[in-house]
Length: 181
Image 1 (cartoon, rainbow, N blue to C red):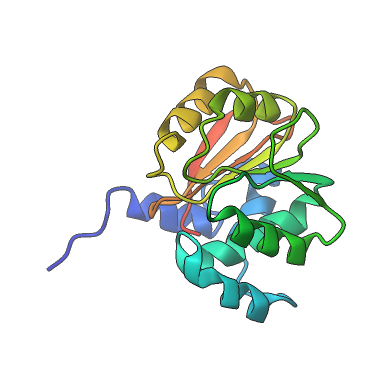
Image 2 (image 1 turned 180 degrees about the horizontal axis):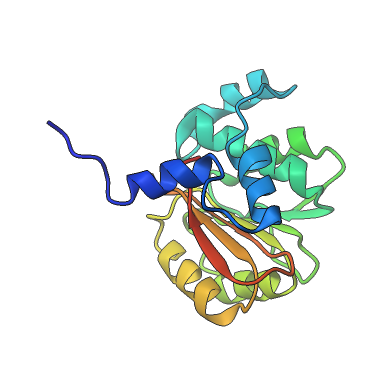
């Protein structure tokens, strides 16, 4: 018999909104992270998902976050998976300008393996950018999450038990949620 991962009950409860007292966090969890209804571009996103960390469900989460954030400038990096991220974000936000170098006015940041710009990502979070970390096993992801918890005095962090994390920097108190998405 295989035992469930540690914290499974909290992730299950939080993914349905139980125990979430922040209205903005509740809405983000229910309408973006855990939304099960179909979106218009899911067939295209599913076709791109083969090379995305986390597969189809993680690619769909990135699509929903990009659609929700309405970002004007999106950093996707210069890693091999950056082209997939650019295509997914382009489907969700066709007017967004995709950049390969991190600048001061980025409003959505996709932190992929090979990105070593933790300081620049923290500065973007301090300016209110949303950060998507699709794979927490990449070399700098643990450091970025630690710095987001310590250095940024606001924002919600949503952590998936299977390896993804999302930081939403909206002027809200700092809080971390374990959610299954």
